[in-house]
Structure formats: C-alpha cells, structure tokens
Amino acid sequence: MNHSLYIAIIMLVGLLGGKLASKLKLPSVTGYIIFGMLLGPSFANVITKDMIKAFQFINQIALGILAISIGAELHRAVFKRFGKTLFLIAFVDGIITAGSVALLTYFFGVPIEFAIILGVLAMTVSPSGVLSIIKEYQAKGSLTRTLLALVAIENLNCILLFGVASAVLVGLSNTDMKGIQLILMLVKEISFAIIVGSLIGAIVAFVFKKKPNNSKLLVFLLGVILLNTGIANEFNLSALLINMTTGAVLTNLINRKMVLSSTLERVELPIFVMFLTLAGAKLDVSILATVGMVGAGYIIGRLLGKIGGSYISSGFTSLEVKVRRNIGMALTPQAGVAIGLSIIAEQKLPHSNGLITGIVLSGVIFFEVVGPLLLKKALKNTGDIY
Image 1 (tube, rainbow, N blue to C red):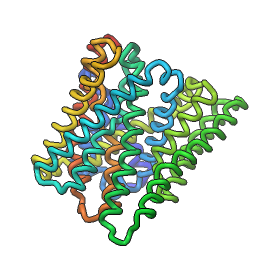
Image 2 (cartoon, helix red, strand yellow; image 1 turned 135 degrees about the horizontal axis):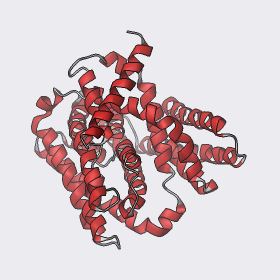
Image 3 (cartoon, one colour; image 1 turned 180 degrees about the vertical axis):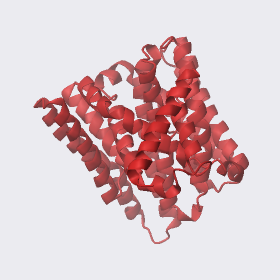
Image 4 (tube, rainbow, N blue to C red; image 1 turned 180 degrees about the horizontal axis):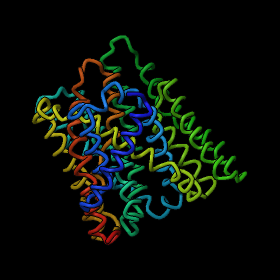
C-alpha cells in the first residue's frame, strides 16, 4: 500500500474507534488506541513496524502541538494563584512515583541504573490523554482549572530530571568522560533548550502582536513547531522542552492564550487521531509476557506514586477535598512522552538491550487504556463533567 492509503486507514479506523468508544460511554482516546492496537503488529499487522517508523513526523508534530499547548498553561497568573500548590503536588508525587517505581523494578531484578531511569519516566503524564478528554467532555471546574498547568509542571520536572539522570549515568558508564564534560552535557541538554525555546517564543510573540490572519498564523505556528523539533534533533536537545518553553514565553508575553489554542484547534483533531491510533499500533502486547513482574512493579509503583503522592501532598494545600481525593486519578494517563523518552534512554544506554522500552511499553499499554477512564471518573467525581 502507498502512504496515502495508510494515512486514510489510520484516520478513518481511528475515528471509527473513537466513535464506538463514545457510544459505549468511554473516552474517544481509548477507542483510538484500542483500534490502533488492532491494526498494529500485535494483531492485524495492517500498520507494520516499518510504516510506524515512516510516520514519525506525525508524532513529532503532535508532541510539538501538545508541548506548546501545555507550555501555554504556565502563565504567571496561574502561578500567582496556584503556584505553591502546583509545585508542591508535582514535587512530592514526582518523588514518590520515581522512588516507588525505581524500588519495585529494582526489587524484581532490574539493574539499579535502569531502575532509576524507569522511575524518572514514570513521572510523565500524557498531555494528549488529558487534553483530549477535557476537550471532548468540555470539562470545567476546580479540578480542570489546575490540571493542565499541573500536567505541564509534572512533565517539565520529568524532562529536566531525565536530562540530569541520563547524563550522569552515561558519564558514570564512560570512564573517559571527565566531570567538566558531564557538566557541559547537562548545560547543552537543558539550558540550551530553554534558551532556544525562549528566543523563538519571543519571536512568535512579536508576530502575534502584528495580528496576522488565522490561516497564516496556523501555518506559522506549525512551521515554528517543526523548526523547534528540527533544531532539537540536529543538536541533540529536547524537542519537548523547547516547545514547552516557547509556549510558556509566548503566553506570558502576549496574554492571548485563547488565540493560540483556537488556532491550533483547527488542526489538532486529525493529527491527534493519527497520533493516538499510531500510539496504539506501537503497543506490542507480547511484551507483557516478557517483562512479567517487572512490568507489574512499574504499574503498581506509578499508581502508588500518582494517586498516593498527590493525595498526601495536596493535604498541605488549600485545594477542595473533592479535588484532593481525585487529582491523583487525573494524573494517571501516560503515552507518547514516556515512549519518546524511553527511546532516547535506550540510545544513551545501549547496553539496556530494549529492557527500558519494553517495561515502559507494558506500563503504557495499561495506562493508555485505564488512565483515560480514571481521568473521566475523577472529572465526574468533582463535578467538572456530568
């Protein structure tokens, strides 16, 4: 089959899956992922592994849109109102999640350096899973107001910690690498990404102030996302961090978040349908038998961290009781960011021989299906949707 047929199948079958899921009172995201899994190598093999690789650009565009959208939630007004609360919850549940997953996977036999990376990767929350469900059900309320900014901070913390942890582990495994080289690697991977994202965000803000028409603005934004991603790939930086920084700088300079979100909304749905359907196709169900108890340890540790950690930390905040009881469930979706970082981890630590990706994929299979259901339940429990 040619690429046009593949894209048509991915979009139409994914859309059908979302529609059937809605009929069954399930989030559309769950339908996209399950039908993608049925199309993928684990079942029908209509979408082959080669085709999944060929469509990596769709993942890059989708993750770029998500990163800018989530970065746009980091407005100074949000921090002024919820700053201490958000950072406390993100810090505590991040530490508990990373610690629980690292300890459990290490207990089940994973080498300590890989267990540390798995703990860091478990901190990620799927922006696409959260954003899609909030938009699908038009959620509004106390939980929704804080959730997107919290997801942004959780992923930002993970990306920063991942950069530090991976660089340190690579440095320790390389006896020829000196301390100064390790520091320079950290500066390159984190500081340069923030500097590039900030500069591009300032340029985008300047263009926004000129008030171009919506069609040209959409083309410009997509170009910026691809530019950020291309720069990141060329210089081995974090595309997610660059795009998140661009979104954060943009929203704080222009105070027109609605213009940004409404512009991107015009192209989000078809890209997200393809992205999530491809994410489902990537899931190799046979990996569950391979990782066994280690995969279960990853899942249990992450549930303990997200639900238990956020409940404990939110007890020291002024959040409503109903939000405190449900915010952990709302943070359980996990997908593309975790997979993307696990692939980067495999490249940095090649002696892992696919172990990291296999364990993360086992967790993603669980959290891509169960996470959206828990998020929907959390939004219902708090009255954000009916």
